[in-house]
Amino acid sequence: MYYTNINIVGNNNQVSLNGCSGILSLTLRGDYCKVIIGKDSTMEDCYMVCMGQKNSITIGNDCMFSGKVEIWNSDTHLITDMEGNSINPSKPISIGNHVWLGKGVKILKGVTIGHNSVIGMGSIVTKHIMDNSIAAGNPAKTIKNNVKWEKGFIKI
Image (cartoon, rainbow, N blue to C red; front, side):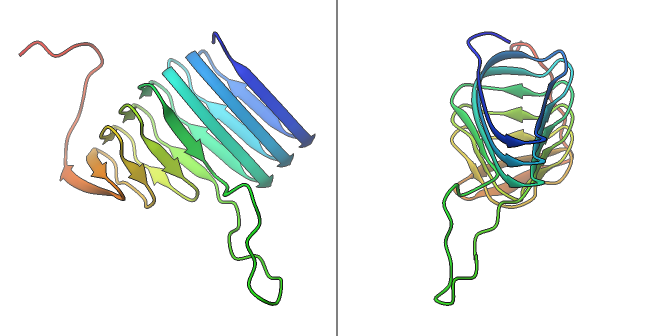
């Protein structure tokens, strides 16, 4: 990793960067939270926020994130109903193996993105994306299933 900034506030938190590379800015705030980034994953420029209690962001192996990607598993500020009960809990994010996030993609709390998927440029992901899918838009919707992709530049 290079040009990396990691801020951790709280107790018993964990950050695991398993042979990944790129530019990362990470804010981890809470207790028993963890961020795990898999082997051979690359990030052109990624900002992650992991907050809460026992919350997590898990990224698989061989992922490719373009620039200005944001991953938020928390709204960062509490919202309550009129009786003071929280209505916006933080929720884990899970990104599978070999996932490509296009430039400017934003992943919001509670989302799972399946293996071998592609998220189109500028998309905001608010719901689960199945394996081998292409999703795009705001909010992101699956536009194609049963796909695969390769690293490297297009040759056709």
